[in-house]
Image (cartoon, rainbow, N blue to C red):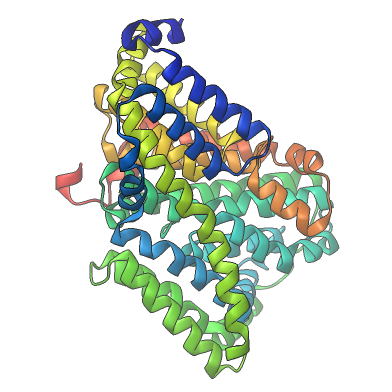
Length: 442
């Protein structure tokens, strides 16, 4: 019914259907996402004639010609340097010292270190790989089944795009014309909610199945252990401190904060003698590979989004959906369903650049704050990182351990449910996204 109403509203023809079918077929054939989007965009432009093909090159350039996007490779590089210098292990030591007094302490430490890594790299896949290599073997030794240990790391790493600074918020800010710094501030409470929901879910699962013991340490011993960990690894927290203070105080833009973090992390690596000039080629190549996946998607999505806008698809979608129901709570639930379903089959970046311009008018139509909409969208898409068939984090931890993706996905169900509850809270409680914002954004 929705599709029929949309078709009647916009009068869609083969200039829309053929590119969409082509896109789906290419994705199903495992063609790179940027190539599938680019092929669909070019096909739509040629068939519709809405935009001269001669302007495609200009659109590809302007799609990524944004100062804010410079922050993306900088945060990716910071995360890579963090791992190579061994500073990420200092986070694990402190997280373990914080939680060792409780039953399930190392599982909790794993979730916390995922959040700490997220506060620097802004990438979930990088967090899953880095934290997974450090913790999965020890989680298994502590008594966790290997599939569950993998699921715990995969779920914790979802905070990579949810806790600021996040690459996803930089991209959606660019697409919708919203300051990344504002989105970072708004995402702080929701990101921490996701982190603590995963933490609490693990504690509940651990209590039910008694995976891990612990909790025998006295408070005096706990305090002494924590002080020792902070004393030996306090300098690792300089990097997230610079990022958070610089961005949230307004003294640094996200790009400047990323650049400063890279320089400081490299300097610390040299001072600690855990980094050398010989490490730079591999480090830069690794970061360039990740960045090389993101930017072409953004570039080719720009002409596709413009063609869809000229054809009236976003406006037609709003008319079609509101024609079915005018209940805001139902429309919000529909948007969440679309986002989670999209997150299950496609990566975050193409979902943002394709769906944000389509769903944003619907959110505006029901009076949803644009900042709240962005936070809801990114959090809902984040659920897709631990849900098949794509489940990027599932693939990452599976690649590290050799564990079956289906077994990991089955153990990840409790974490999917807890994240879904947080998505609903964000969608229906605006204060979670706007409390920390200046009055002008509320």
